[in-house]
Image (cartoon, rainbow over all chains, first blue to last red; front, side, top):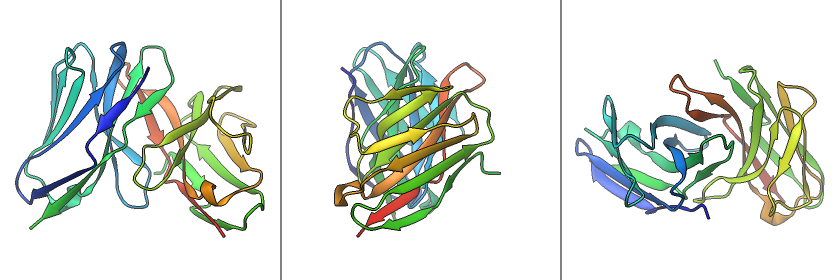
Length: 111
Length: 115
């Protein structure tokens, strides 16, 4: 079956790196995603990675994928107050139009 | 410019009083979704349309219906809202990024309060 799990909370100091982790169960997942949700808003796509890659970097964001362990992480370098949000991990299968979300990790930034 | 637009942003209804939420898109995407999101939970897929083909999730209550009169518009009808239906309702469309990945574009959501 399909299941995506994340820890619920993460607190980091401003300027430090944040690492948000996710595990998924479906080994046939083709794409894995990170979405960001700010209060009262919809979900915004941050980045995604194809399952045959193990790393993708985009400015302050680094995605690492360990397909053997079905583990995905999102690293945010130099975390800023504007990064406070809920971060959702998600997976989809090739040719499937269904994208499954984790329960989200709430990232809070302390001064 | 917003590409997936939901109206209203906030809806208050009474227990049992029908409500309709609307979603429009300017992306010309074939696939449109409705998700229900309760506080601190993952968005839960209610149903989706592939063009005019309606795909209901097995655990979506009959109380929830949807209409898609054309490519641009999709509606969520809640026939008899209960207190447990209070949530954020998210509309999304599915398109392809440059690499071929399927990516969802979300609207800002409609927050439903049931009194």
